[in-house]
Amino acid sequence: MQVHTKKPLIEDHLVSLQFMVHSSNVERIKNFVAKIEPAAIGGISLDDFYSKHFGDQPKHSVSLQGIRYREDMTQRQLSDVTGIPQRHISEMENGKRAIGKEAAKKLAAALNCDYRTFL
Image 1: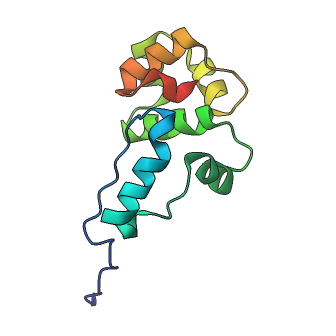
Image 2: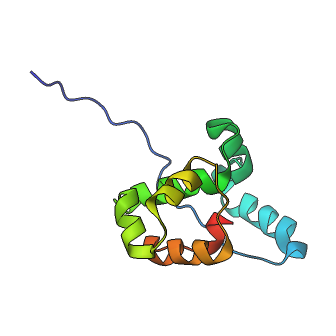
């Protein structure tokens, strides 16, 4: 018999935002956000997240594998769409091959994301 369990409390409707600002405005914006939404401060930087959870794996490798998984594509399917050999995609995901700008653009178009994610 299944027992009804209490769902864990999720941060009361907080929404994650990501945007680009001029470097001279970063501190001003952080201070403004801290004043109007104190619970939003204290996050973790992307670099810290990668190093904490993925150790020495290159960011582009983790990103490619994660986004491909999000889009529910196999390496073979991604290869067919982009024209990049499946072996190369595997090497990219395992950190054995760098992702060049042209390959990043092909991957991004197929995976519905920004190509700079892979650079």
